[in-house]
Image (cartoon, rainbow, N blue to C red; front, side, top):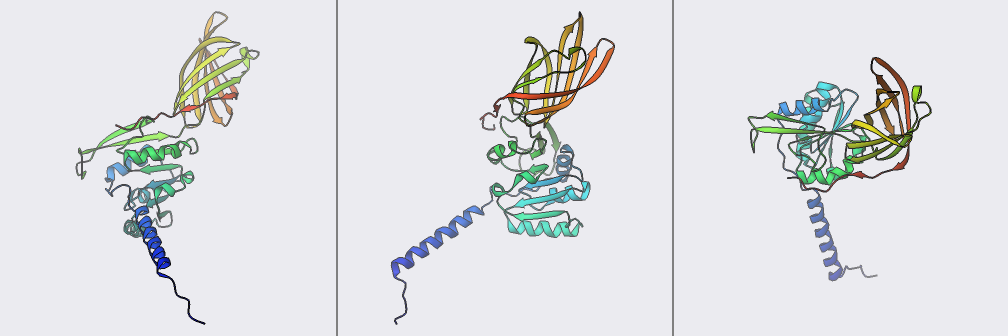
Length: 302
């Protein structure tokens, strides 16, 4: 039997396929953002702004030499992981974690950040480009309400931050000698129509609330037995919703201050009743009877 020989056209096709696969692999490994180290005072401010504790899992996207995950573990006792596409920087970060005695609480993964499972994190830190932030934004908004996100220097377009801080950075390698830190808390979906009753003097009256929501910004309109009443100070931070309702009752101005946690289509919390010199507190439970859409905007960053 004669030995099998691969025909040249087949060989050429295989070579071409191999070259294309190698090129694709190289393209996947190209960094989306150049490595620029974050100043130590910025690292500290980012972790403080996120209120990191030993109960947190910090995920740093584009971790470079690992200074943010290492600081989260060493200074706050958190567990942390750095995602970095440059294998040389991964080796540097692992060696530094070992040197600083936190290798047991910090891991570094050589991975494209767009392939990373973000849902594990309670805190996400990043120093990326505005365009990358916007690509990540839908995935970040889909995380568990209450997840904290901190970005060095770049915002997320129309998603206004919950906090912002400017810091002097004299040795910054580019741009002005200062940095901006942006902070967000992933909001729950509170949009739609909610209904409830409370005890006390209003035990037999029905509350109806319509919430319009854009990112974490909310506006509430409330009626009692179909009659519009004043609603003020509506705020949403993670899954916590607070607002006030004011109206006249028996000739007296009465304010109810609602504070509850959104869990799917349920809210559970308490309501503080304030009437002249009298105050009381009641349990509060509400149910969503109609879901609404949360606005997320489309504006590109400036």
